Image 1 (cartoon, rainbow, N blue to C red):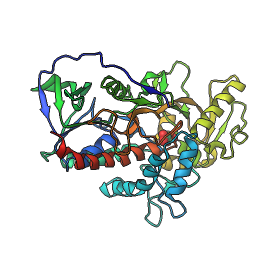
Image 2: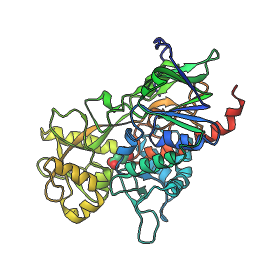
Image 3: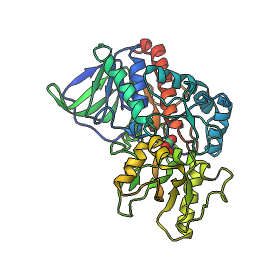
Image 4: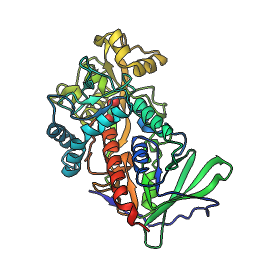
Length: 426
Ligand code: SIN
């Protein structure tokens, strides 16, 4: 495991105003929203987010959220698949926590109002993605799972907005984690583009700080991450003296719509679920190349498929391969993958009749700010959750659709830890 430490050496402008709360949560994806909703039972929560509430990666997640919900499935099998995908570098206790608590957390998310797709018998419908040997991916809105989860969580947050226990500041760029004389996190400095008193550089002070700031895909030329994923959380944690681990384990998604070599920034994702429903990968000469490379063929773990794609591109001197979903039929594709079909069509490609050009692009940071099973970092009072964190769950390569689950499970655990410990913090 690679560990990094960086001494604090940057100073931010002195704050012109201060807001007080018990818990300061930075970020508004599944992790930040879950913690805000649950931690308000333990104390007053201030959630700050860089732009608007739904701007982060969560709302862009297509495929879904993995949990052993099916009658043929079990947490033990989900554990096995996660460990296999992680290349021997997962923390087994962390994975066991994820897969054991995951099903209940997903049911709670549904009870909160997330409208997952349902099977004929009313149970949550499940599909398959790369590296999973069972159908265990819950999905919503066809291929708009993250958007629906984000909607439900934000709606739940808005419903309690009048609650004096929770406040939100949008358009707030956090510039530093503040620590007290004992080295304990006691708030953040932030630059807000706001109105009235809360505008410009200020401080959000609390007895605990949670970083839920997402990933750093925008560091790469080509990524599936939205513009806000600029790695702020890792930088903040480094400057506060927290341990950062496994930053080298950056996951590339194998099937991102290829829009030419000059395309930069966020690129359109073509979910693994399309392969989960039966689409094939072909090189530019029309050959299916994954069957020779792994027993699960197109549904091998993501790193295997990404390497297979890059090798096929090199062997054919091409800049992309093809995703072939034509045999799935126009009606099925439009119903199951409305977002992807619309996006492809906006570029003049119809997945029902055309081969779709795809190539790998940066997708996910499997490493991050080191935490324990309670979400605590190595800096007292500082927690991290979601993509910014390293919980040990993902190892060298995250299993598809385990990321939303990790944000949910650890978000819940952090809220419990806060409820149990905040009263003892002066
Ligand atoms: C996808 O839909 O292919 C992405 C799912 C994930 O990143 O887990």
